[in-house]
Length: 128
Image (cartoon, rainbow, N blue to C red; front, side, top):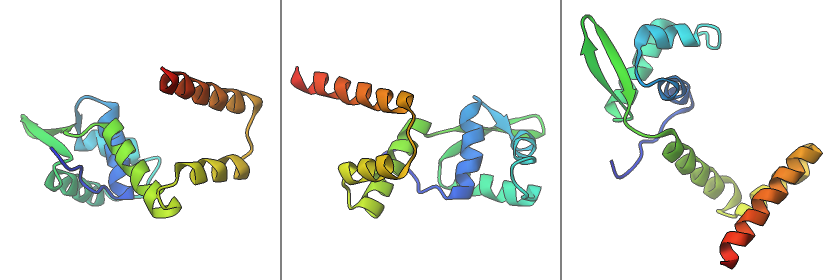
């Protein structure tokens, strides 16, 4: 698939469950969401149907049950969604986003050291 489908916030909740397992039934999805969301099973099945139509998930029939699996990777979707967010909110400026997050969030020394390590690794790769 060339272009990733646009996935709504509600659909993301379904995709997280699908990504966490190789294959999952609608009953397993409903059960997984029962403590987190107040959605009726019909709502969840509608979201599953939308994801099927968008070709984000596929299915196979196993007896009377449908077993769902992801057709798109979580990593690809996170990357696409991150880039979309960056363009929409920060006019594509990664620097502005990082500065905003660093200034507005409380960072532990461990967080700062991890950020420093990531930036140093990036410098090392670009210097080679």
